[in-house]
Length: 487
Image (tube, rainbow, N blue to C red; front, side):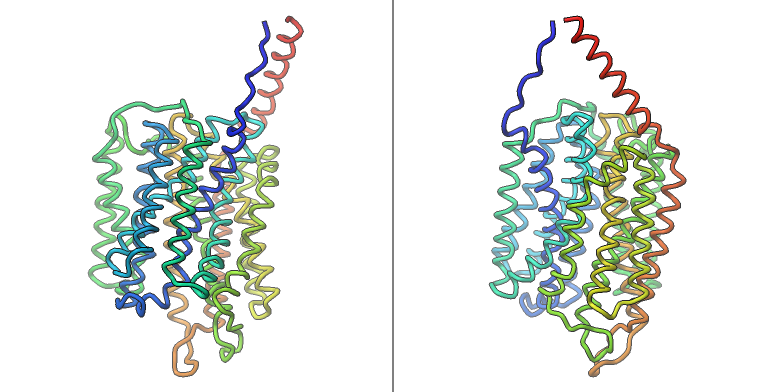
């Protein structure tokens, strides 16, 4: 006999908004410290190089913990691990609000890096909990929260820093973090999909050591010198450690990262595309923020305040929010591979606008908005590709690796942009300032990388899941109608 499905609880309808709030919160946490960086040496009594570790520490811990927490979520429960990722983030904000000691601040920011696992864990929960007709748009929204939060975080933090004590900013983020933890505990169900087994501790330690060496070398190469023994040693150590880790993962009974999945073209090329898309996306906000704040004496700078700079980047966040449903529709009709390629192509077009004109504010905002549009398409397609290509029990760990590749791309973008701007400067009022040619070269490099991401996306095997999914849904609908007629 046919029985109607049970009515969902009212709070079940909040699962997607709560998870999206967590993703936005994660991106805000990573961004809020940026307006503080110029003043931190005065506020803490530490050198500028030491203060930069407040960004580096978050980057390193996030890169290390994302695949580890993703695997833990597949094994022990995604909701449980999601809460475990949000709690250190909140604690880190509390510690930053209470202290001005640079050592405590760096350690607290490292705790906040655990939140980088929020997005892959949330996407896996959405796959497990939502019906197929809602899953695509929800995953697209979740992917877009990275750009939305980054666009919101900069003007929010700048306004608080400008009009209140800098510790107040961390009290605000701590309060938001507490709300996020409570909301997830109340509104998000625990996924029943698990991948049981023993946690791969050697694999986690090996990946952590290799990534720390790699990202430390990438992020500090500009300060320590790319040819210095320390940087060369870090890159060599990273290659050796990650090589041994790869060997160990292929022989582990329950590996931290299933490298046999990575060897599939659909998964492996999606990870390469994520790295390239992360590089291209990050250059937009990084270069734009510096360009519009440059002094007017340069001939191109607009001398905008930090708050005004944040407002210039804000439209990109709203574009990502509004266009995420469109991205889901394109993926449903044409496949995520096409969406990813289209997004990368739009990013490249946006940088073409930036190269054509980066003097007028409206053209700067237009170019940034076009890059944001492409980022929405690309970022929403990447997890959909992963969800189609891996077993349900490994979605969190596989998406964690994909986010890790984006993080490596962003770190590489930051180092590349810094190197380009340092080598293209001219004196303004006695201080070296990047030239317009340096900024345009950075845009050209990012646009070229976006075109490489487009080519990589087109090399991914076709999307049988898109057409097959429509046929499968038709068969399911037919069976359901026959069953109803029989009752």
